[in-house]
Amino acid sequence: MPKNTHKADTLCTTLGRGDHPESGFVNPSTDHGSTFLFPNLEALVTSNAARLDPKRVAYGRHGTNTSRQLESVITELEGGYAARTTTSGLSAITTALMALVKSGDHILMVDTVFDPTRHFCDTTLKRFNVEVTYYGAHETDELKLRIQPNTKLIFLESPGSLTFEVQDIPAIIKIARKHNLITMMDNTWATPLLFPAIKRGINLSIHAITKYIGGHSDVILGMIVTDEQHWPQLLNGYSQVGQSCGSEEVSLALRGVRTLPLRLQKHGESALTLARWLQNQAEVKTVFHPALDHCSGHAFWKRDFNGAAGLFSVLLAPCSHAQLSGFIESLNCFGLGVSWGGYESLVLPVDPSTCRTAAPWAEEGTLVRISVGLEAIDDLIDDLAAGFERMKSH
Ligand SMILES: *Cc1c(COP(=O)(O)O)cnc(C)c1O
Image (cartoon, rainbow, N blue to C red; front, side, top):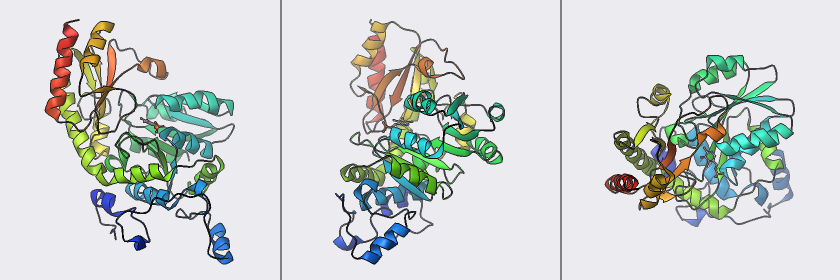
């Protein structure tokens, strides 16, 4: 049994194996099910009375014992009270927001948020009369001025999508508490290992399991972890929208958890080596990586995070389309594709100018997001070096 003195690496191997290991196997069973049978009437009545029990299983749509195992690991690592698995990272965000806000409310959304979250705010939330103000990732004092009588929630994502600004999370939590606002954070980049958000005072922490926790590019899932105070409201909202995840996916995610500490360490080390190397290349204008001194919010990252993940971006000096495609298409180790956090390295040209309003993006040159996989670092460097050579020849 796990002890509460155990470190996160140990918890990743000991938690979520199941409360009833009568099968004898190390792993919990992968439950396929709709109907859940109660042994007698009293058990049914007791279960109905215990709706708020985070471990309750009563019908397949609300999750199986397999989901409860995955939720228990992530909850413990986050320092949360309870969690629910969702069909995707995006659905974790939309479900959590819908569960906690109502028509007439106002929310403060970080400008560097994952673009589909912004799109949901600007369309669906707007349609339901929820007002959204985007605040700059570095605002703290200015953030206070944006609070209105109907402000309900501050949404954080740190580091920010595409550009990796790190927020002053403790200062924002302090402001939120003073004004009785909920804090919700997209914690996908750090995972609970590099930033146990709820332990640090965030109310609800959201993960795209799809990324590092799944880790093998074979699963789409999300997770909402909450503190005790917001659990009843979250569960209520979650149950109403019909979220339901397949147990095969949940099992794959649970398998990912077992090696998460090891993978994240390698992703992080390789990414930092690569980021430092890229900084010295003539084709590169600047590198956005929270562990580099010049990256905005670097001091906050150093103070608050347990390390860096393997996702960052690099701003290439202005170049022609032919040069850019010469570079990207010549790469062997880096695939061209969306998503990140898998074992394989990826590159993706991105354009923050289409998804920033509080602090418009005005950098010249092409921003390329890099997800560093588990390949040998020398091969990755050689691959990018050869790519830059190809770029010159165009
Ligand atoms: C990918 C991503 C999501 C969404 O996850 P999906 O499983 O693809 O829906 C949410 N937040 C961040 C920061 C992401 O990178």
